[in-house]
Image 1: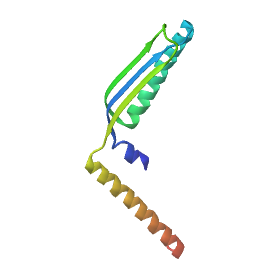
Image 2: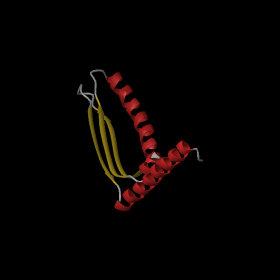
Image 3: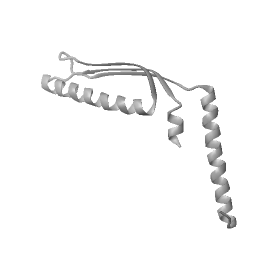
Length: 109
């Protein structure tokens, strides 16, 4: 039932900025590589589940700082007729399951 809902949402804009920083250059480089791999997996998963229009992804390193920085911003939208569609689909499934439960109690189907 959630597949009906999730394809109706649209991610209009996704901004992700990550800066890897530690006191050790080797650790920073490892974090940078891990972040790149993680972002590619997460974006492909998001792309399969939602319609993704615009994305700005930035992964950087800062060898002079010791604190990571993460900035995430997203704009999600859904059209009004899609809300009506979801309501009709869920309403039908709820009514149908209620009728089936009633028939089973009475000894019917």
